[in-house]
Length: 182
Image (cartoon, rainbow, N blue to C red; front, side):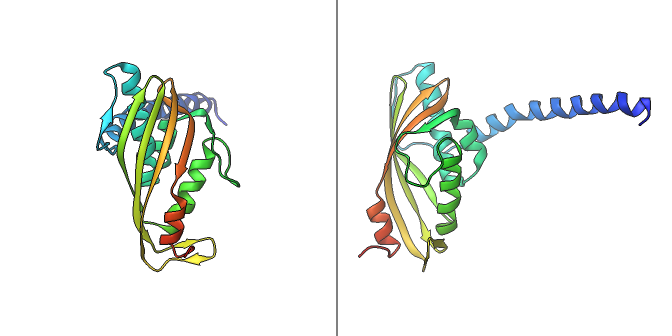
């Protein structure tokens, strides 16, 4: 390796790193403009509440799009699922895996935030999931059945990110719509 190549490589790496770091705020700003909005929000007019609403909208947009960048923007690195389903990984990997598996079953999944209430560091969110079961869920193959079920989440937000989540999904309705329950 020549002396010139050795001197240029660190400078090139630094330039690439600075370019990538500069692009992160651009993603955040453009991505925030693309976030889904809640039909109804009850929140105080405080910076803490605004950060909590933003985190919840980013997380809902992750479920709406399947884009892991929204999950990364919404979830704390120390994220904990307090109602962890059997077999799901704890931490941020759990929602990433769950979204991928559910999108394999319902590729056109859409998510709507019907209600959001912020109180202190807590956010209560009423979500509605819609789409068509055209993929595969376990051993069951979809036959284009319409899917329409609700979920309720409670988040604890710290430093503008979701640190903890407690959630309930209407799995009985979902499984009935998928033809897996009578």
